[in-house]
Length: 265
Image (cartoon, rainbow, N blue to C red):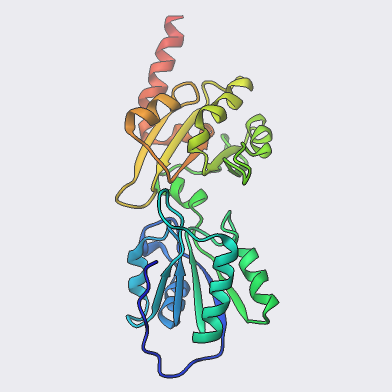
């Protein structure tokens, strides 16, 4: 745990603010989110939060890392809830800083509900969800006239470690499908789309979107597994399945190859 002790001379009334940090780039946090960090007495932040975002905070703020990374100490949700309350009661304003948006697979409502159980005032400051902003930064629109009228945002892996049942339905739809936390199940997810006859459907895999560690693989359902391995893409990463991926500049050579192949056949 990374903790820096503050020097507050007087304790303020307890309150909690859930702040979405955005997809990774510290500059993509909202102005209101940055102001909340500046006002915080304590910040509890997750693994997916770029620590550069903490530069918006008062230098004397207490910073507590409660994220989860492979091979490192991590906090369960119950422990995080209790820490949040304890710090609020003892120090005042607690900012719970979460990657992306707190309400998109961020368990934000659980923390909001927990605070309500202790009658501690709480508010939410939304963040840019990686589901929309990361493809957007790659100039991949989730909807586009003539290509996609809607989109799904689905978790790749449920709490039980299984593929989400919603993915089966999403693979059958004509919508753009964004899969978060699904890289480890990529082969199984690809199989779902193949079973629906979508082996030629464009796909993008984006690692650490908006950050210096960003990597991109653009292909089709039939090739994306090999491309991900070839480019060394690892978690955290999201997947975008849909015809909108064909708008990405990197897809053009692929499109030309298949058009030429069709002409030869």
